Image (cartoon, rainbow, N blue to C red; front, side):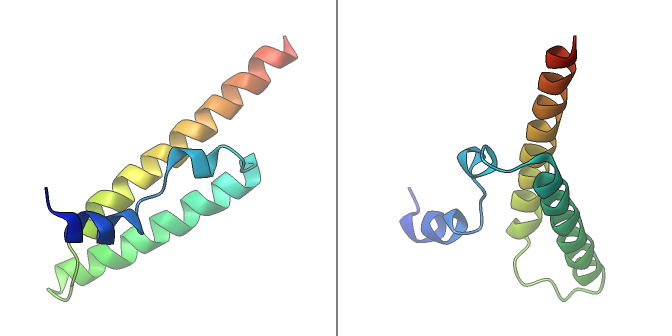
Length: 82
C-alpha cells in the first residue's frame, strides 16, 4: 500500500520472534527502556516537539508484546512448579 512508510516503520517495530529468545531479566530491562522512551516522547508531544507521532503507537504495541511475553514466561514457570 505505502511501501516507503512500511519500510520505515518495520525497522522500529519489534517482532515477537525477537522476544522469544530473551530471558525474563532481559525482557524486564527491554520493557523499562521502552517505557522510558515512551515517557520522553510524551514529554516531546506535550511541548509540541514530537517529530514522529506514529512512534508512540509502535512503542505502545512493543510494550504490549514485551508484557505478553513476560506473562507467558511467568505462567510457564508457575505451571512447571506445580
